[in-house]
Amino acid sequence: MVTIIGVALSKLLASAGLLPFVFGIVGVFFFMLVGLILGAILFRCGGGARPVRRGVLLVSVLVPTVAISAGTVLFEYRSVVIDNAEQALRVQNKNPRDPKFAAEKAQMRAMIENYWRARFGAGGVAGYVAWTLRGGKFKIGPTDADERVVVEHKQAGALWLFRAVISFAALGWAIGAQVWPLGRRPAEAKAADAAEPAARTSPTNSSKTSD
Image (cartoon, rainbow, N blue to C red; front, side, top):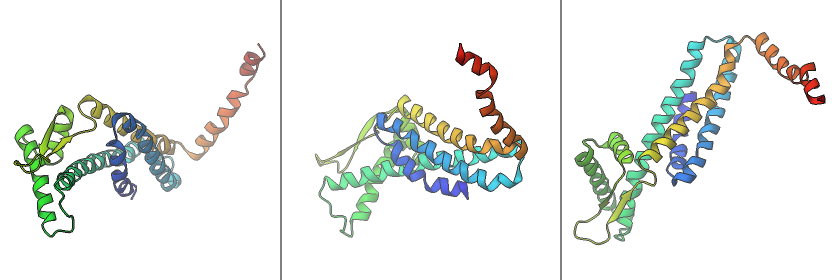
C-alpha cells in the first residue's frame, strides 16, 4: 500500500525534479517529505511487530525507494514528451478541439521517440535517460515550417544525474529514519529515548557548562 501511494505521488515529484536546476535542488525537500510521510505510515503499521528483522526493514526501505524513483523517471519522460509535443502544435496555432489534434500530437511524440532511437539506439524511458545524460537539443515540427520547437532538457548531463541521486538518496534516508527504530524492542526503544535527555544533563556535561 505504501509503495502504491508513493508511486502515485511520483508525478508530483517528477514535476519538482523537472524544474530548472537550482529549483530542482530545492525540490529535494519534497522527496524527503514524501519519504518521512511514507516512513511514518510504515512505522505505524509495523509497530506491533517489533522487533522487526534488519533484512525485512532493509526491504521495506528499498522497495518503495526504488519503485518511487522509477516512477519519477517515468513521469519525467512522459512530461517531456507530451509537453513538447503539445508546444509544437501550439506554435502552429493548432486547435486542441480539432478531431485531428490527437493524431498530430501523436506524430510530434513519434518525432521525439524517433530522434532518440536514431541518436541513442533506444526510445521510451531508456532513450529519455540516455538523451538527458548526454545533453543536446533538437527540433520537432513540420519540416517546411519555421515554427519548429526546440526540445531541450532544463537539466542535462551531470546536473540531472546529481539531482536525481541526491533526490532518491533523500527519499531512502527519510523512509529509513522512520522505519529503522522498528528493529528495537519496545523496551529498548524507551530506554534509548530516556537515555538521550539523561546524557544531556549528566554531571560531565554540567561540569563542562560550569567551566
